[in-house]
Amino acid sequence: MARKKEETFIVRISECQNSTWQGSILWAEKQQRQYFRSALELMCLLEEAVESDRRKKALEEGGSHEK
Image 1 (cartoon, rainbow, N blue to C red):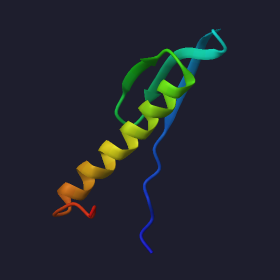
Image 2 (tube, rainbow, N blue to C red):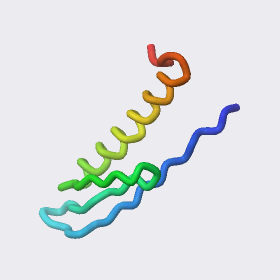
Image 3 (cartoon, helix red, strand yellow):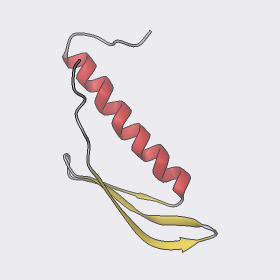
Image 4 (cartoon, helix red, strand yellow):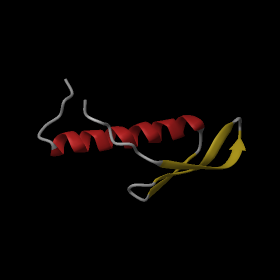
């Protein structure tokens, strides 16, 4: 079984307004920082980062495994 690569994200919550979080997320391996205005936006940024990295690696390996 192939081992999946782990990703490291550092989440900094700077404020909590309107019952949700605002802050920044740093993708440690790529040194990319993005800011978010809600917990939902934070989850979307995480998913987008992991999925885009997975698609990029699939293309580098010779094609997508998605159907």
